[in-house]
Image (tube, rainbow, N blue to C red; front, side, top):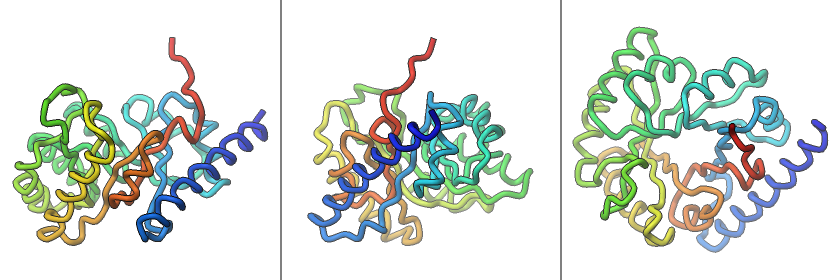
Length: 234
């Protein structure tokens, strides 16, 4: 079973790499600039361990309970990304294992992460989540209004235990991916003038990775295209 599962994941990864290569070719980018984060929510820890053998060393989760369990279960060494909406009462747990937290969108969260990181003497890498949905049709996705970006970025920069690594966003359901990522690229271009070291751009998932790559994404959050249809829960 393990070997057949590995073959399936490896074949899927080859297809993803081909998609990335084509998108890079059309936009004049180097494929080495693009990192795949395997979003492993609902998949077993055994799947996560298989990823190392095909060259994937970045793993993402969106729920703390599942992520903290897998972090302890997985044998191989990965860079762990927390990509879900983060509640303040989960910060203490998430900071223990997350190399990157992608979903920073409010000041009280910044303060709590700083407090916890300082206690354990850790420099926590964070990304600010941008809300591209002007209609606010999907408030569950989180993110800050782009007009508030610089203010939050400055607050993060003032925290000695936080490292501002870049920006993250999700294409809104009511907007074409191309339009969303064009807008995100414009926001990032202005942002980099003030924060030139925060170069990460976490954008693009299984269905829209090409548009994300064309418009500057450095990190793609890929789940079903890599690992197949998600297991049913319950």
